[in-house]
Image (cartoon, rainbow, N blue to C red; front, top):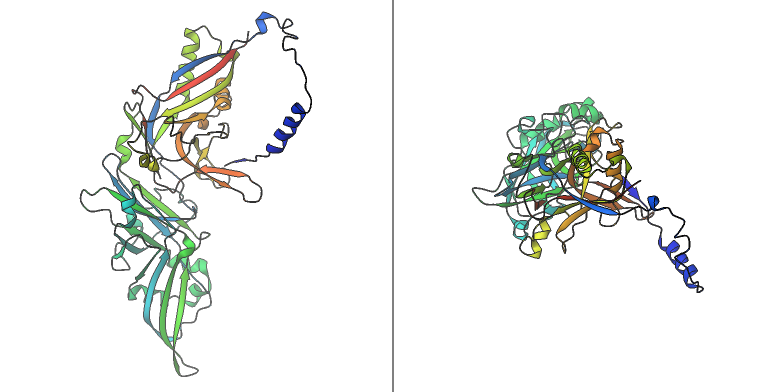
Length: 451
């Protein structure tokens, strides 16, 4: 995560006032004769064709993401992508007493859909069948990735009849009486402890059907765990009072309880070490541009040898990484592209002990910082510091293997600090120019060589 603070306006105004408060004539020739010729640096440029590959973003972290993602999308090029969410659900009170002979009146599952991700407007209201399953596998911090769960980790029989969802604000469906009776069979020990309760009732899974046949498109539904709950009504007797009574039980989920998303992509068939025409940047755990900067370093070493340049004496003024793309046909085509991309490395997080994709801290995120340039049809990144560390040999091995990933940011309302992180919850479909195109991925170097 990268943070920045911007407090430059006052300083700029102060300097402006100083320079405009009086008239000063400057003789710019003063001192020009004191610099020996050998210390006058010549600024030059060089352009390198970057060997971009395409690789899947496997092991993308999806646990505790703050969202349960459910849905799917079909595409002629990228194939089929699906997402299902697994989450814990716990009783709202830990001291339930079910009374004598409890019998179910009804049990309902409900959730609010906070956001919907579609690549075309018409898909916002397509029908999707929602299914709720019982989870067989415990959610814990070691199961952190998009490939941590599979269909074998939940019971194959849904707890509900297919519930048609057409993109509204919420989904409500009836669950099976058998599942309700199982909840009512929880022991006193299970009712008194959430952790013991979760050993038996591990959680639920939400899935949808893919679009039928050859129909393309789809929708991903973004659900906050706090909006998921189960309501159960049951009747029972209180023997001491000899009365019948109806009671309600509430089960709920939160972002602090375990939840994890699973993504499946068929775009793995597009992986390539040298994509010629098109390079795709797909959302979620899909196909991404990949650059091995050990290859870039070799390119620069070969260039230096051919041009009699001592790389150890090179001072980089600016190193700009460019990913051009073609006009998508109309302005609406840009809506499926990520707004900002960034170089990220995959490494072990020392705190969580999980492998994470982390934005490179040495890459300059100010200015455009990988923001899409729709006028010039390019993504560009200032990688000056990062490339200098590579040439000096100070970059670690993980930092040399980079993915171009969609980036999200969040501003602190009070401090103005901006936090950057890899976007692992939005589906994109950007198409960049491949290595054989006229406008291909390139590194543009502005440099000088010390005498």
